[in-house]
Length: 186
Ligand code: ADP
Image (cartoon, rainbow, N blue to C red; front, side):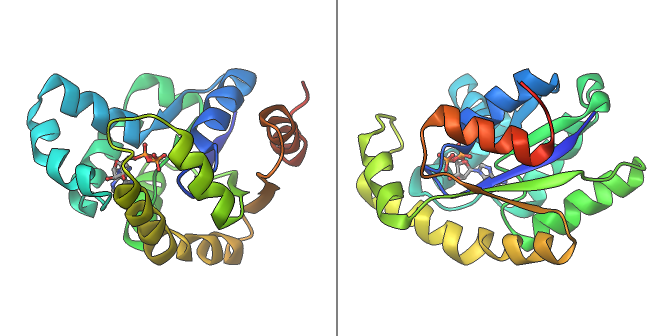
């Protein structure tokens, strides 16, 4: 049973790795980006609230995200562990998550940071075809990551939770590196 966070810049492959790892260790992979995109597609109240901000590459506000994550972690499948992909993304969100976990008497096992050089990230992102993947939006997401999410690396390192993975390898090799680092065998 593991409770994990996957950290990585846009294009680092963290979404792919979250799904692989979730399968391997038998816990749900919780992607806030996917949850929000689904809400936008379905035209829910949440979706309508976040559509415009997502389209710019900026972050949805911490209070809205707190509600989304609190609700998701309250679902029964999260009781056996989880992988968070895309949350937290700010120090404020990290504090909120800590409070949510504390309220449940849960703690994190590790924070996996998938590290990829910035130029490689831009190339990968440009090769991806998604409606919200225009170049200016991609650059904005990278900027937001650097300014708001990168500080989480030091934050979790200070807590002794950080696990650094070289993301500049094949998908399989990254998956293998993560598994080894976490001590989960194939
Ligand atoms: P990426 O394409 O970088 O993997 P995601 O799919 O995780 O991005 O998220 C897409 C968008 O959803 C983000 O650019 C942001 O607008 C919004 N979003 C997702 N997770 C969060 C979060 N934890 N806090 C704020 N906004 C978020």
